[in-house]
Image 1 (cartoon, rainbow, N blue to C red):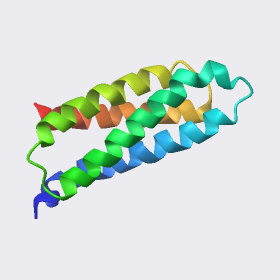
Image 2: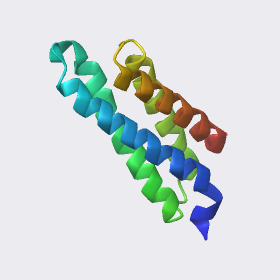
Image 3: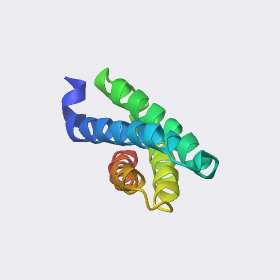
Length: 109
């Protein structure tokens, strides 16, 4: 099965998607939501691309390398934004994003 070779990345993508969704939701509850706007936007972008790549790898997409490169770029951007904020949910999200970006780059190489 095509998805077996990507098992680790699929799990990492799912973890990143969940972290981004949690961060997104938590950012919306912060006192200064306007200050979190870029974090919220990137959380959505990152969760969406991670979810899409997770599904695409599961069905054996022929565009795995190309999608992984785009995903790595978005994950890194999200991680860089999240690490600017002291909230636990942002810091956890940044860690998940950087891990995901690294694994995506390994596939894209």
